[in-house]
Amino acid sequence: MPIGLRRLCVGIITVCILGGLAGGAAGWLKPDETTVTEIAPGVFFRKTRWKPEFIGCNQGWVVFDDFVLVIDASFPNQSEELIALIRKTTDKPIRYVFDTHYHGDHADGNPVFAKIGSTAIASENAAEEFRTKGVAGFEQSKTAKPAEYGPLDYKIPALWFPRKLVIEDAHHRVELIHIAHGHTKGDAIAWLPKEGFLFTGDSCVNGAFNYMGDSDTESWIGALTEMRKLPIKTICPGHGEASDISLIDRQRRYFVELRQYIGEAVAQGKTLDEIKKSINFPWYKEWTGTDVAANVENIEHVFKECSNRKP
Image (tube, rainbow, N blue to C red; front, side):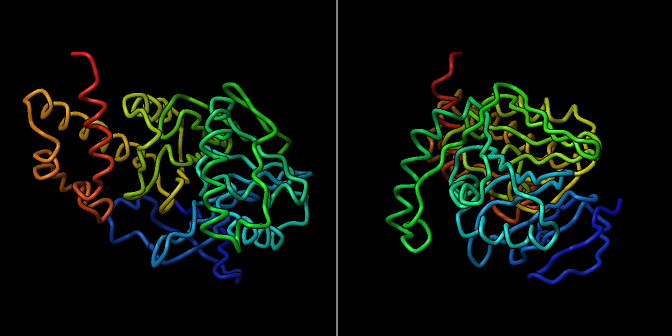
């Protein structure tokens, strides 16, 4: 099914019809390209490159009748780039920026949007993470990247929602939804029911991008299971190429098999080093281009989860 009506590439608008959505094979992934596609009238998806350097998360924006909603602020420099891209599509005020979670590559651009009058929105389950880990990470970045972060003050979202927040007019409806503790405690997604589009943040990614340091993988599997019930036509993930609903199946399979393999190994008395040496999911490399054993931190995280759980 074609999803692309218009694509902006390096600031140049070109007509582009995209035929395939699956993005299942690693060879289909385009790590060195940043593209912007109008996936429906007034709905845009920006896929950011991650090679030769990682520049931030994917982003989106929805042009309502009177204002614009941005999905994920990303890093400050990427916020600036996104604002310039939005201005090529509309002069309506950018009223809201929705942070899918607190991580810096999704939310550190909030102060850039605040300068132009935007209000940051997030799940109230993320509030503690913003006020603690978010602040600490931003301060570290001020030291590591003074040119980009130095002049800025951290901006915690000003609008919180408990479970669901709907932004709607005659043309668009966006449902901001918190399902469960997944990638972080405060994970939330943006669902566009009229179009069947799901912006997942890092709850679902297309490639080897999963960071599990703040996660609960058992609960994360449950969150993906709930997302799978939506009549999804297109997934716009937090990282990697857009895809169809099968991306949720691949993401969920990774967590299920990782927990199963490591859980069984722990029950058999195997050590963490033994698990690291033996684990092998060929299908995962076909999808991401990366050996499952290369994600050492994820293996360690799930090993800790499985070792601490009750029999």
